[in-house]
Length: 258
Image (tube, rainbow, N blue to C red; front, side, top):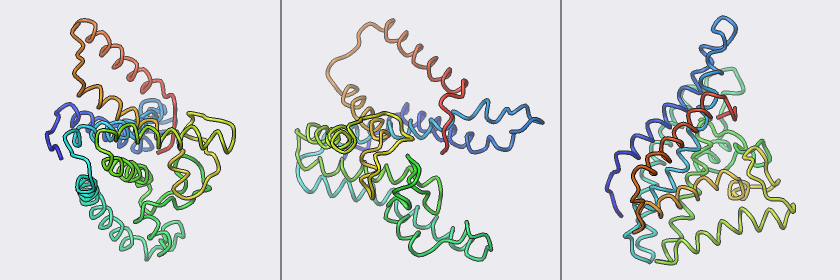
């Protein structure tokens, strides 16, 4: 696996994390006495989660671009991702138990069943509101359910060597297009809608998965031999992209719940 760090990716991770933190902190400057500055400025901070998903797809391409085909590469990829996420997550869940078990509020009374679902990255309420499908014990952990799903499928695709991206595209075409069409006759991009599926299938068919695929596409383009030689035009595209993101953030659209 390639461990080369890209400074711009680290910077974007920081931006995404800060956006999510500000989104959650907005409640402290909400209300008439604060001129509703929290929602006005930081409602769009939820988009930090979307940026994380795109970065995940990009990083997977970047770190595995020299990986050979076969089970060894697949197992190594899974092992690295598991070691990076699960132990810290498990410690945080244990801390959650220690802090909340003695509280009288039933909303903070974790059960063994909920804990098992949380630690296995399984939606706690597959029939619940999309794209969360029920919150795990640590509420922000709902996005990890998607992350781990990405890791599982991308790692499996490594078994196919140079055909990995074709296999990955076919798998997601089945989940995001073919299956929704077969079940409902509809394909949508609204992350707050679902197709009524249960279990991991509600995650596989969520429109949020398109963001991961966008990151994969960006990663493939970044490492392609083709280069954009007109630096002036490239600078204009970057400036327009940054302007569009800032406008979206400051406009408060779309206001979502993380």
